[in-house]
Structure formats: C-alpha cells, structure tokens
Length: 323
Ligand code: EAX
Image (cartoon, rainbow, N blue to C red; front, side, top):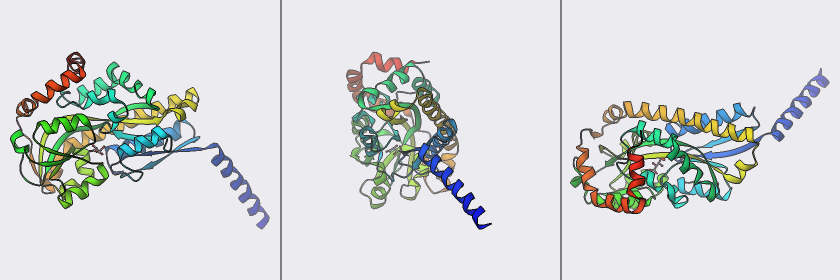
C-alpha cells in the first residue's frame, strides 16, 4: 500500500516535472485593474495561448501596474526583461513615432470607424512599424474614447477647461492638444494618477469610461464631461526576438490569441460605455453628456493646423475618410 502510493507519487511527480520542463512561461502586464476592459483582454489572451499551444506556453498576467507603468512595461518588452505587454498608445510614440497620428484629437467619428481603421490596411501597416524597434505588435485593441474629469467645476464649454491642472499621458500629441485648450498639463504615469487626484496635485485627468470606472476615479473626481476628445487605442506588444524564436504555428497562435483578446476587450468597452454614465452618476459624479462638440473642435483649430503640418493633411484625411 505504502509502496504503491510512493510509486504513484513518483510517477505523478515525474509527469509534472516533464510538463514543467516543456512549458515556457511569459509575462504580460497592464496598468488597470483585472476587472476592466484591459484585464479581460489579457486574461482572454492568456487562456487562448494555453489552449492553442496545448499548454506549452503559459502567460502570467499582472495588473494595476504591478510591473510598472505603461512606458516602463514597453521598455521592458523592448529590452526583453518582459516578453509581453498590453498598453494604451499613450507612451508608444516614444518608441514607435509613426503611431503618434492615431492620438490626434477628433480624428475618429466613433468606435466603429476607429476599429475599421485599425483592423484595415492603415492599422496593419502601423503594426509593422514596431518591428524595426524590437517589437512584434500582435494586434490593436482598445481603451476607448477619452473624456475629461476634474474636481473643480462642470466643464460645459472649452473655456471651462482654461487653467485646470490636468494629468496627461506621456504623449506629445496629447500634451500639445490639451495645451491648446488652455489646460495646465502634467504628464504622469497612470499608477500615480489616483493619488495625485486625491492629494490635489492635479485637478483632473482624462480617460475613457472603462478606465474611469475600473480605477474608481469617481472617489476623487466630482465632474465628468463626455468630451470624447480623442480615441485611445491599445496594443498587444511582444519582444521581437522572443516572437521570432516561435515556430510559425505558434506565432500564428499568439496572433490569434491576441485577436481573441481584442474581441473580448472591445465588447467590454461597449458594455462599460453603455452603463458607465448611469453608474458614475449613481456614485455621485455630475456628468455633462450634451456638450457642443463643435466648440471643442474649433478650440483646437490652431493645434490641428500644427498637426496637419506634422503628419500631412493627406495622411490625416486618409484616416478621417476611411470607410
Ligand atoms: O491604459 O495612462 C492612461 O491614462 C491610460 O489610458 C491608462 O493607463 C489605461
């Protein structure tokens, strides 16, 4: 009896050791909570990788900036100290300048337009630009349309933004645009934002509803205005050398898994967008949901002229007019 148990134990132990030997573990991180549109993205991705590679690859998931903010995570992927990251495009232009164009304010009409551009030839060409910088960009995903929150006042017109001290992403396009609104911009990594809002280091911030909700910004921000001033993409990035070492079939599995992650992610953004305003109102926020967007567009006319020079009007129009 005892011997039998020992034998079973040995066999089991040996089997587990073999499985462990044959299994490669990789890390992926996000700056938001697990219970969020980004959490759903990487959880789905991890599950799909295991399934599609019969457990030969396992992806360990890290949330809430546990491995650092988005810029740090992308840096880690470039260096190879972390295999994978899922990030908004916020800090991405510092690594792949061509992606800057995606964060131009009022570029996309709605989510369907943005998703079509990202999934179409323009987006797919942009994914290839990551290659030369040491990344394999597996797929575009989504953060959503960004809206303004602050602790000072209801923002109904662009004039109301003047003089507000707001945290921005570490993104040159965002910083230029918000300065155009008369905002006092304070670039900061996401993991520091809640405390900065709580302590009053900044008056406000801007993020899509899924981020505002999952980060519980309602606890430290009273006023929300649905400006939808910029569409914020996300991207699955992988260290290029690690990707290149995979077999062609496994490479395909990683790309397909990322696409599944994106599906789940976009569905969750839609869900959060649909119930977000009611949710946040119930939590005590004042939500201005009927702003005259044309006024915000007009306020950015000078900055936009600058963007047209920098990116080329034809390139911007190609995105704007994409059907
Ligand atoms: O990716 O930094 C930001 O405001 C991002 O939108 C957030 O980390 C979610």
